[in-house]
Length: 181
Image (cartoon, rainbow, N blue to C red):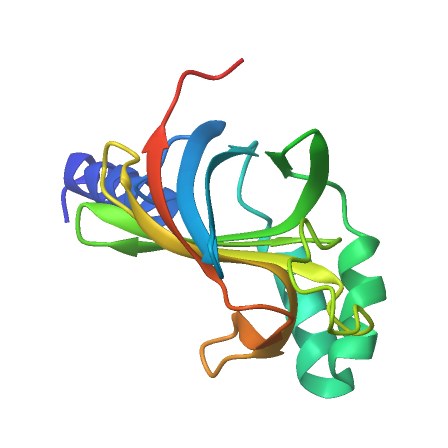
């Protein structure tokens, strides 16, 4: 093959591997939650510096796959923070960020090392020690998703993570890209 064609293929493959979103990424995630007669509308601020590197992702997903949730927690918490989620004066640090390209957009799976909110005061908080967000975004950074503010996770067959259980029903999100601070 011609060297120019090979160089072009390398550039195109590396661009595709980087995913559809540009980092750092700042998002506003709007939600509306109803509990009984009370309805609350609020916005979460999500800031992602970068996706996690493959070595760290493999380390934590292997801990989850082979050691369960109790081995996953310390492995996750040992990783550097790569973003944050803010809500009502409270901030949790993202330590797991995985991007999967989807057409012109992408799916982002985010896991913070602490619960962000716990709405049901009648349930125990023990075991629900993470925040998980699952977003589907278009190329402009707009989309939808869900957030579990206090959750447990489990491994998926593709080497990722999914919600195993949650303290309260996950909230639905409408997401848009905002200017970084």
